Length: 206
Image (cartoon, rainbow, N blue to C red; front, side, top):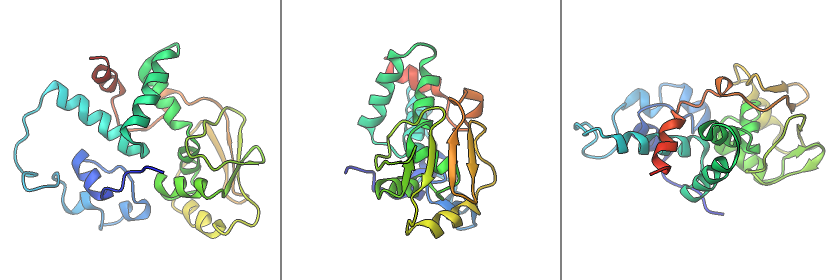
């Protein structure tokens, strides 16, 4: 299975903001953004000439890293978004938000999306009572996500719920029973992803 193995903290520094890729560490003073807020590399503190293309590229890279996707995966989502009715950028974010690994993270059952991806891949979660081990599985309204009975990751999941301040308004979570439900499709104002999706659309439309 292909995945991005580059240092997580460097990714946050490159984008100039916290992408919360390392879970609890991102909430402490050890976070790389807190210690070195400039981009990585020997020219990180130098001046970078801004251009329209650079701004668009950075937004795309930020979104891709935020959700933990490779370039080919991200482009496939964009292609699907263009074929749907409505606003392409919003369609793209909605599909990314309703990935099973992201939903597990949004419900508070994992400290980071990378951890959520691993838990799903190892078969610790059920969707409507059926085991699903595909992180990109698209959940739908009224789907119920539960931790498998007797899962060895139960304590890990409970520890993650302690870090959760709030659950997305389009989801419902029971942290005691370790179950969650998708109430509806997420609206743009309910998605707190720190990207300007229109810049991504402009980049791919060239």
